[in-house]
Image 1 (cartoon, rainbow, N blue to C red):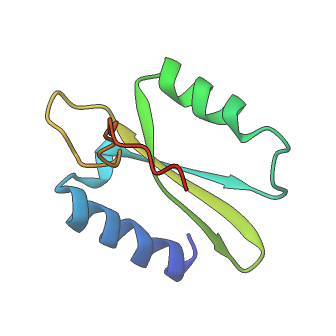
Image 2 (image 1 turned 180 degrees about the horizontal axis):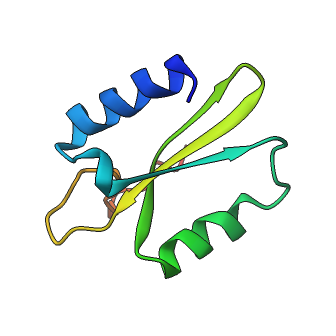
Length: 86
């Protein structure tokens, strides 16, 4: 595996506190027109995308197993009652 990909895997493992057995790496030669198909398929398999990176012209998707604990992959969204109407 490419050394830059290995470095990225180490960073993802450190950031989320997971081991290599919890990760899956998908290499894509060309960017799919509908990335949501990949997201949906990974979700069906119990995986979430942790990182997407382009290395030497190839797209690498790093997915990890879903856990019951929050890994902080999804940003916090809030709905405000205040609307700025200028």
